[in-house]
Image 1 (tube, one colour):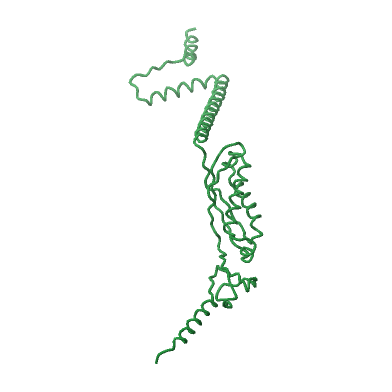
Image 2 (cartoon, rainbow, N blue to C red):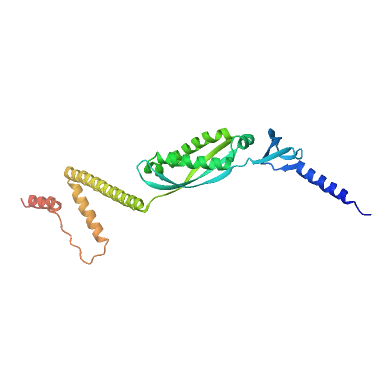
Length: 254
């Protein structure tokens, strides 16, 4: 028995209507439902039912989005031309606002991030950008988040990834770093000489107060020479060591 063609068409239409009426949303997705052009709410996740040809939906992901901010040419506060790129982390908190209040929330967020990056970095010195990057990142996050909040978007973090310096600036910074290292080396050397002079002065004062310390030091030097296994050792004897024996001898003769 053959099935009439009209029945086949009806069955196909029913399948088409059912497939357009039933939608499955993942756990991280939400659907903004429009009924005859008006928003009736946000649904999901799971199975949702739409009225065919009347209801329309816009899918919105609630996962954190990682957006790369294209390299921007920036002139710093101290008139240094640099190229900076960054990465932006954000997520949609209110899907209805992200769809209704802005035409394309991804594009809009990217644009506001670019302009804010140029503006904030242009108000900072190069040394500040290199040394206080955490402070710059936090300031960028606060300003971008303030602009995107009306769109239902929460900016969690902004990280400046790379700062490209012109070659002449790199050479100047290399020379500055080399000069700084040389200065530190000279300072450390001078401090060592100063400390050594202080110790020698204290040692001289001790020897002056206790002359026998000089003889002990002399004997210690001889001991050090003996450990070198020299074939010949010159051993001069100070007169001070022999003076007691000379006095005793002279006394005995008397």
